[in-house]
Length: 348
Length: 264
Ligand SMILES: [Cu+2]
Image (tube, rainbow over all chains, first blue to last red; front, top):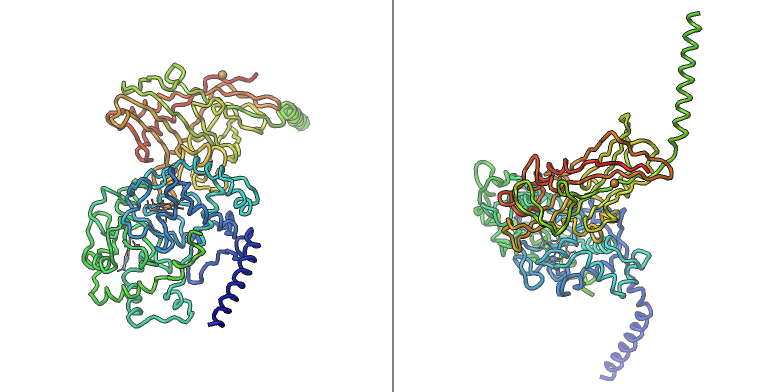
């Protein structure tokens, strides 16, 4: 017992000393450095890092902004409100996003991860630079509902931000472009590529079970034309037949205004599906079983249905129940728990 | 003899060429500014906000906001030779509410007599997809360009009229005519970039130490007139999408006219 008490005391003293050291270093935040490193199994990045490389101070500023609700009209909603780290930066459990004044959007919040590999964002690809993206949710009347210029002014008038901008950009001056670049630095660091699949792919000691391997092979045959590369998206737009009319949301055609683009949506990544439910642009599928059943026999036809879903005059992708189960087992190897538990990415 | 004659003539000719080129260099060296003054009009009258105006369809509009971008200037001399004004730093946003925006001064123009003036009404596709760090001045979405930018469809609004009209069935009888669309990022789509080409017999004389001014009349009503007469009742009180704005973009090519040039 005495020994235990002593031990406790020792731990206490040691802890106190650590705290002291930590507080001395407070200005420097922590010694951790943030550098962008592309995982070996992912294709080439698309973000223009030469204009805006990730730095430790830029990442820390970007993270602060991402979780700052003052960027919304009534200071209620931050980016992190709809993109939470523990749900792989989606809006957990929400079919469509839920923003300011409890207003509902029309689309499911996609995971904000592996953004550096994309140059077309949103389900309709309306935004073509990550740096420009934050303006859209900030100004969206059902998301954060604040003029971007006003949002920048609020940050300018918050004295606490000055040292962060100074550290990140060498001057206390706060501008719209710098704010956007800092947010990109944070988002670019949200890299998820540490799933069992990745470790298997990179020969880091993981192995897939026989069923998972079968699932992988089926997936390669049936799904990888759209869900391609280790990003599991071709970053293109397809109609995968979840509806037969798209009057409420025309998808890609909302941007291009071309009839051949009606009902096409950007192929989503399939990483971290365990945490990103519900699925599809309108959040209409709750489980992977429903998704696989959809591809097997639920595909609805319309003028723009993708040719991959009407091969050999059959609509859909025929899959036996066992095949569906195997594909699901494979998809589960894409869950990256390290990513969603990474405290560096969470609100501090 | 004949030979000598022709040599003589030739050398005289070359000599005179030399002299005239010397003379030209003398008076037209160096650079100077040139101002384009954009004077918004409504038909033959001066343009006024918050005033009832009758458009070609006979309908009434009352304008509450009028803004447009001009950029990519090319100046043409009487002999047809062109000077391309550098794009950088030469994006201007004309705002009916702010007089100072209506004078567009192009700096460092080579001295010369310019009779033709070309520019884009809007923002070229390259700038529309430019890195955010280079979007300064009129193109800053957090600054001057804030109400001329579509956040959900990365791109600038080239020409914007907000108005009210008794013919509008939208809330508060509002009308929003927002023309944009640079042709699409990865999928070719509507391109509403229009090049305006003006010329006349008068020349703007650019010289060191002077600032000639081309006074351009901009008939806002023309945006509703021809070739596509626009009716609020039938064509709609608002558009925010490139494809629906093509009619107005085709009309506003003819909205600009040189009224006169000041060379003093
Ligand atoms: Cu004048």
